[in-house]
Structure formats: C-alpha cells, structure tokens
Length: 346
Image (cartoon, rainbow, N blue to C red):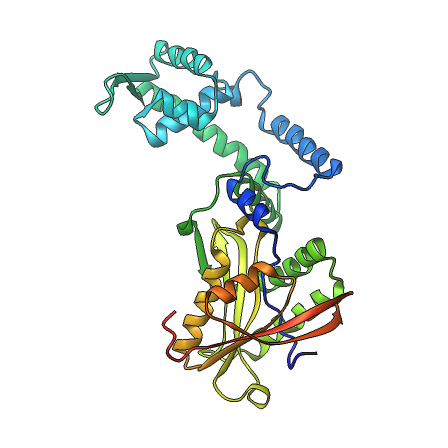
C-alpha cells in the first residue's frame, strides 16, 4: 500500500467519448441507454407539460399559445431581434413562425423595421400594447410558479430548483469557461463531495462502499483539522450547481518531510469533462500551494483514472511509485505522483 491513501483523479472515458461529450448532442454517449431511464424521462415530460399547461390552447388563460408567449418573452428581453434569430433560438419551422409573427403584428403587439445591418431583414420589437400584454403574462407566470413553491417547505424548494437547474445544464449548450466559478466549500458541499465520489466511482468503476467511506474520512479530516493558510478546498459551480471539487492539505512531515502539500479528492462531473475544468482545478491547487510556501506537491491515484493522469503529465507531475493493491472491491494499481513547485511558474 502507498504511504497514504489519498484519493485524487477524475474518472476517465476514452478519447472518442471525450470528443462526443464536447459535441453535447443526442449521440454524445456511445453506450446503450437503459429503457427504464428513457421511460423515466418520458414520464417526467408528460408530468411537467401537464403541470405547466403546455397542452392547453392558451398559456395561463392569456389568449396566447406557448410559442407566442415565448416570442413575447424573447422580444421583451432581447429586442430588437430578427425572425431568423427567433427561428434558430426557438427551433420552430420558418413558415409557422412567419404566420405567428403576422398574427402578433396584426394584433398591434409587435412592430417590424428595416434592420440597419441587413436591408433584407427586419428588426422586431414590442409595441407599447405588446409590452403591456407581456407584463400581464409575466406576472401570471410568476404567480403560478410562486404558488407551486409556496406549497413546499424551504428545503424541498431548494431541492426542486437545483434539480431543475441540473436538467437545464445537462441538456443545454456546452459550458463556457466563464460560467464555471470556484468557491470555498459551504455547508452542504462536503456532503455533496462524499456522495458524488461514491456514486460516480460506483457507476463508472464498480467501486464499493469502502471507497465512499474513505472519502468521508478524508473530507471529515479536512473540516475538523484544516490549517487556514496551508489547506484549502474548492467547489466548482456552474450557475449554482456543483460540478467539481478538489482539496489541498498539508502532507504529514513524518512521512513526506517539511514543505509538502497533498492534492486530494479531484472530481469533475461527467457533463463537464472535456471542458478544461479538471486542469483548472489542479492549476488552482498548485498556485495556492506555491503561494503558501510549499516546495513540493504529492498525490496518490490509481492507474485506471486516465484523464486525471493526463492532466498531471501535462502539468509536469512525475510518476514516482506504483504498487498493486486490493481496495474498493477490485485489484488496482496505485500510483504516487509528485511535482516540485520551486522554479515552476505554472
């Protein structure tokens, strides 16, 4: 066994799947999807469309269809817009959108003017009557959602909102770097770190509960024994949803000597792999350790965590030891990596 049982590394996929993930499209996963999961998504769709009133001829008794309401929303928040922009943003047929816009113009709710940048296009915006119609619809929508949430206690409210954020982020566009922010762990985050490590490694590698127990001990030690200024953790968030984490702790001087920091518990959510978040988290650890006065960093991982190992190699870490061990229900090859911080500007 290694000198210490630190855990680090992002569970990996092969290169082809990393490329597919970046595409973020309907064929992003090569593995077959379990029929029960497909059935669950369809069941949710039926529930939510019924609850939201999507199947009604009018949304919130406003006189507008769902698509008309969405066009009014876009024009209220982004105008002026062109019809081509609306068609792409909403994913609707050009002929259907043209007829919808004609109805809204005939009702005096939107106006069209020649676009300054393209004489062939027209810029669309709301009229004063259109703005009043949208404001009524917007207030009705806020009241409806407010009633749903008011029926729940604050904790379930937070669970619902986070679940909806997760659905939107997972099925939405690929993330941009500026959408991901790093934060100190807050109440609830340590539990998330433990739960996600246990769930992801079980799903992707079949590791048993002993791994989650190890992560729990590491996380508990960080909270109870943390030395401010020498140890730190980061939680990566995208629009309020946790998507990654990593920690730096002081290595035991009796085992490693003075001035050594240890990188632990690196994790990136599958939906964010390939976006550079793992390397960003490792770089942040190195920066902190260098500024805290450490002369060297170390970590322990396992050989099957290919994506994490690639990050360490790119950033100048060196594999210094390997050993086989039986842990988490499997026979594995543990690896110790190190990096000298003095003289390394990265």
